[in-house]
Image 1 (cartoon, chains in turn orange, cyan):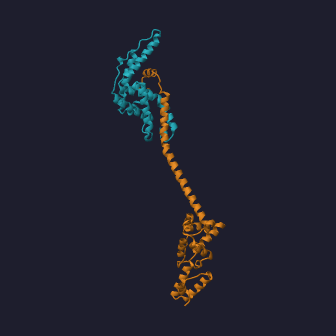
Image 2 (cartoon, one colour):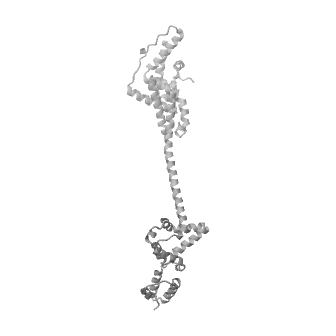
Image 3 (cartoon, chains in turn orange, brown):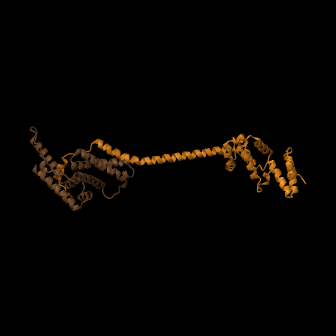
Amino acid sequence: MADPDRDVGVSERYRALGREEPPPELDAAILAAARRRRARWAVPVSIAAVVVLAVGVTLRVQIEERKDAEQIALSPQVMQAPVPADELARQARRDAAPARAPAASPPPAALESRVRAAQEAPASRAQAAPEALVGARKREAPAEAAADRAAPAGRASASVAVGKISAAPQTPEQWLERIAKLREAGKAREADTSLAEFKKRYPDYKISEAMRARVAPR
Amino acid sequence: MLAYRDGDAGAFDTLYARHKGALYRFVLRSVRERGLAEELYQEVWMRVIEARARYTVQAKFTTWLYTIAHHRLADHWRKRGLKLVELEDHDAPAPRADEPQARAEGRQSLQRFAAALAALPEAQREAFLLHEESGMSVAEIAAATGVGEEAAKSRVRYALARLREAMADG
């Protein structure tokens, strides 16, 4: 159906005026602008991707460092490292608590010698104890759990050693003090038994007259 | 346009290729000054690009595109003031001595037609150009230019009558 508002003659004459097109450089500028606008969308997305990647790498590095620290805590070298006297004293106080299992109470000789060595060590040496050791001790429990799960031979033995150190109950002085308290409380038999055990463990240990008066059988 | 809005960069190329010639001629024959026409034409497309995120299908893309062009031209006319060129101001050049008579007459006839088109009131010329270049119906012209259909129809018909007169004079 013909368009009543269209005149073919006029349309033909109008077409004869020419079919101008925009210059190619104008086309290129507009098309480039259309793509640039799209590229602006891509910029925030790129930034977000970089941030996510950076956070991921940082977290990964932190996890790896933590694993390394746990392995240091379990290594035999660390177990043999000198321990500051105050650290051992803290352990002894913890172990002297009454809730402790009886099997953990007697201090092994090796630990005793380490206690003495630590007490006799110069202060500078104690201060120079590696920080890694302190960190490792803080993570002692997770390290033991990890060792139990993995259960390789080296780790298992290290775990046992850690257990012994943490079970180290007391110093000779504390032991004697406990005997004295038993004596004062009238628990003569227990005091005698403990004193006999002490003498077996420390046959050459010298004590003061005052302490002797407190722990000796009356 | 929906594809371009949704991230298909190639869709704009297709859209641009389809509409660039008609829109360019619409703008060029509206302002009759090539440099200005190119500037306005580019601004229309920039507005299309800027508005892509808000684009929703409410009418044909052609209608939306020429609505943008209409507003841009209206801004231009507002700034400059509407300036009509009378038909009598455009004297056709005399034919060259060596030019065949029929060819010379044809050229002069075309020049008169161009002059008549240029002399149309802005609203009538716009309606005629939209009708010819974009193929829009009267209803679509009314929508693009923000007038009623009767007004749009009247503009188209008046423009056609003036152009027929110019052709008959030749």
